[in-house]
Image (cartoon, rainbow, N blue to C red; front, side, top):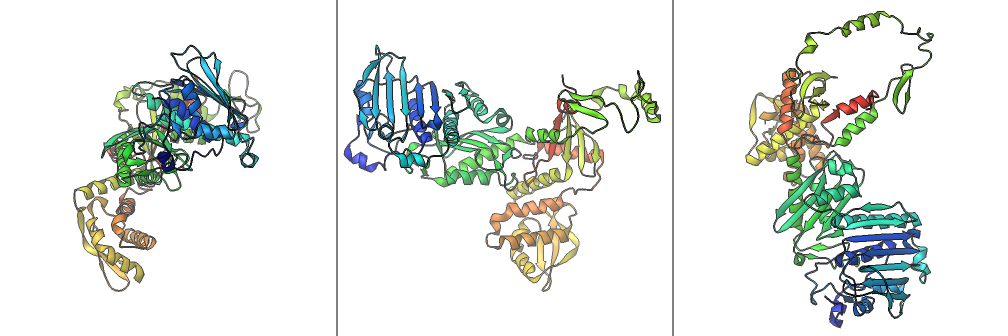
Length: 600
């Protein structure tokens, strides 16, 4: 539709105009205009961190002379069908960006429609407009902004370094590229490393674009979100719980195609991963939420970076449900980055050899004080003679491989190391499983399943176990007894400084009752509120699961190890313990060969 001047009453209803805070905000407004114009290709060029030059070229619909002149007027827009602000379906709508930019920089707009013989070029220098002049160009629009804030030195003085401003521009373009996978984005300039994100089409377009922007490892270690709840559509990718970062900078949120910051969405991510992520770690997510425009107010922030939901509880629930379903479907998957960390932790022992970029080189000239070995062979030691016996074929090692290695996802157990780690092998990988962490997750998930269907089954203690505790701890446990009983733990006061445990959860087997009760007492003291105990059920279950799991130091039989592996394969979230640590590490055969320099 043609650009029109908004009526005075609507101008007054719109908040203060677009604030050009820094070069990145200029790039954001101009690229959003290009996307709204139907561009399939957007090229961004900068210099001096955007202070010297910002150039945006697109292949959108273009403008005629009337629209071109009106585009640099205040409160003129083509993005509102009527005068209502409750049905915003475009990225930009205030109609003030170009006018604001033109008042603090040298602005040039060149544009041509497909049906026009040539384009037009309009120059605006610090708010003063010239007449449009003809220009030969392809269909689309080219906007150049030079010497930003040159006439406002106070604003320019407070900009950051060129590198920091260029990085801010990159971040803005990344977010726009993530939200618009069908559009090709190129980012170039003397102040940066060039980037090119080709347009992606088809069913896997979003995953491909997120992989291009955030890195291929994110796509490999993320689950797909696809949930409709209460009229809200949640899509995107959510990283596995073992794929985390030290801060929240890798969490991206988009509402109706607009990149936003919102406390409701941040809180939903925290709640969705509360069972899985280790403290002080942040999952990597790219969440796309589609809601009825009437249900969200995007006119809260001048830069439209913040918004307000009409039903924040519904939004929170939809996001939590989407992530929960996706992580459950992921089953026992763990981040591939865990294996990379393990490979990086290995060191080649210094046995007289030297390590080169091509692997382990030949032995050094001397070894342990001995002269070099004689030509044609090494020293004939007793160990070498014993080792030579393995050169002869053995019937035992000629057995079919299928009889010894079954093709389970987590393989079959081969041994136990340090009385805590299970060594398993599948078709092409070696797996190391932390038996305590894995069983802790399994018990935790059983607890949750039993709670969902009713009270947790308990087993009666033949003789009640009396646990002595400080009087304050006994009082807290006595007050929490009704809630604990629903979890299968029956406790009653036994004098001033003791409690008696009559029943324990059946699925814990034979736990250390005294340790379990002490741990729960510590938790109640930490939470400092038994009134909110119902909200702490997951934390209580986690403490119980820890005491009911296979302990480190317990030796297992092969049958027990394999039973644990099989249960992990069918239990959701078993790839990480309840504290967010990985329960197993998988090393591919190629990783192991790389450790020994067997590069192909």
